[in-house]
Length: 87
Image 1: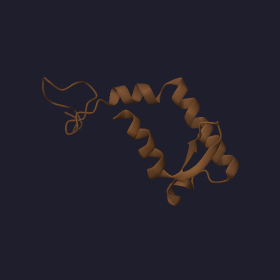
Image 2 (image 1 turned 90 degrees about the vertical axis):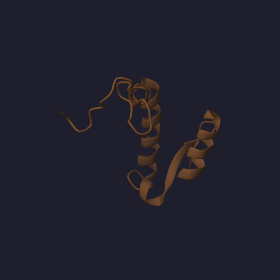
Image 3 (image 1 turned 180 degrees about the vertical axis):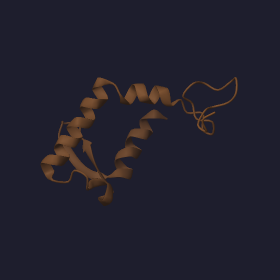
Image 4 (image 1 turned 60 degrees about the vertical axis):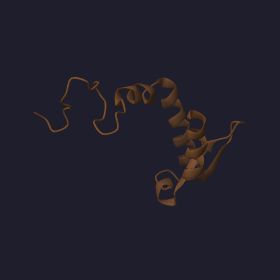
């Protein structure tokens, strides 16, 4: 039996044993056409600015502003802002 196979009756398919997160839902969301387009816009802008592949080392993210422009900002600020809406 594979090591990553979940054992038990009450476990949902695609969920993590420790956290209970359902990764199958995340896969569906992140694989949607809308999210692929969003990520491709960010990557295109990073290539244009010459920072594609270097953002991780700098600890920065490209973020969409409300007016449609993009700005380089700290990862923690960008991701914390988006998490606050979900609570």
